[in-house]
Image (cartoon, helix red, strand yellow):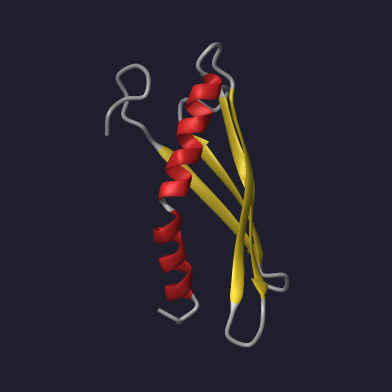
Length: 99
């Protein structure tokens, strides 16, 4: 991976905590080395729409605290998340045993 800033490669951790009774998880994304400059967290919820259907709702907040560049970086992060939607959908279908 290319370094984000400096010489170290990009390293990050995504943590999800599921509450099985509500089919809801909270998530937090940590960009190592940038903890003071960034914060990403939110939730994922699976809503039943009938016997064979459900809706996956992902909500979150991304805050990049870098003067002049923060908003631009936030928009790029949102685009990257949107680009991963199909992979995320496939993951949940496999976990549910549907795929």
